[in-house]
Amino acid sequence: MSELIVNNRIAGTRITVWDVLHYLEGGWTRREIADVFKLGEDRIQAAIDNIDANREYVMQVHREIEERNARGNPPGIEARLVETRARMQAWLDERRKSRATEKQDARVAGGR
Image (tube, rainbow, N blue to C red; front, top):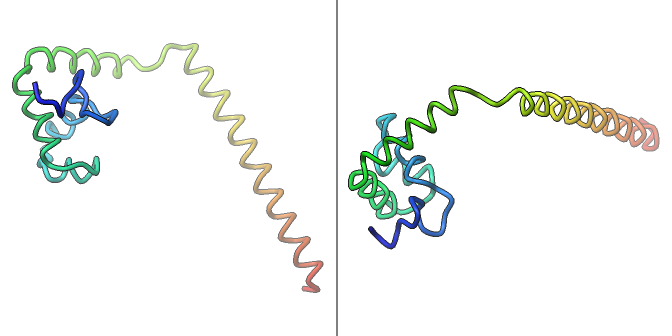
């Protein structure tokens, strides 16, 4: 295995061979993938070489990842996401109101 790939990750990054595989399956070129991840083509090629050398294992894990993604989040996690989105939306609404008030106050203070 190349020193550029450590534990199925591109060394010094959080980018996995499965991240690269996703783009390869989409028909992307090595150069395009390198551009997306802002890495040298040699590092992407090392990931591709690792995929090729360990194809059976990589594809097995890839299928498991895809199956897990297809199942979606458990109900408890989905409920927390709904709550978090609601809190975030309320915070954004409050920020917008606050900024609108600040702008209005600035206009009044400026005589406009």
